[in-house]
Length: 142
Image 1: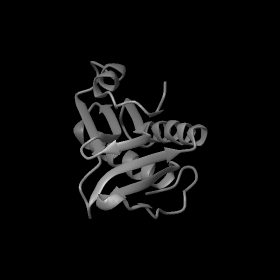
Image 2: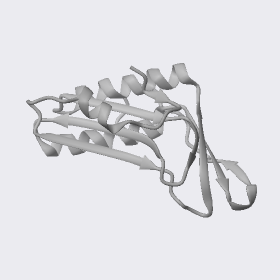
Image 3: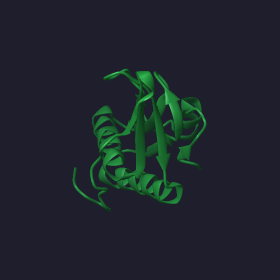
């Protein structure tokens, strides 16, 4: 199961993969490219083996930390235009509280630990890489 892809993100597939009649809560978070300071597109690049491993670890840690049954994370790579989905988080659990908490923790941890780099492209042809933070390792508290 690929967690990193150059293809458009497919929410329906993630919903099908996590379908579970024992779950009363479904939380979906989608991050999109937004118009910010003249940004017209973002080129996402990643070291795929490490990014896939980190995404899988975060899914497992989310399942261990929260009272949920399913967590799926998928991130896009390549050049994305305004409005395109760059990341999806799908969490299913018995109740909304833990499911919301799990989804929030998963996206925040993804942003801190997954080696995905963003090159913002602006009007007029200028581009720059977004300065990030050092990648965190393993099971750290948010």
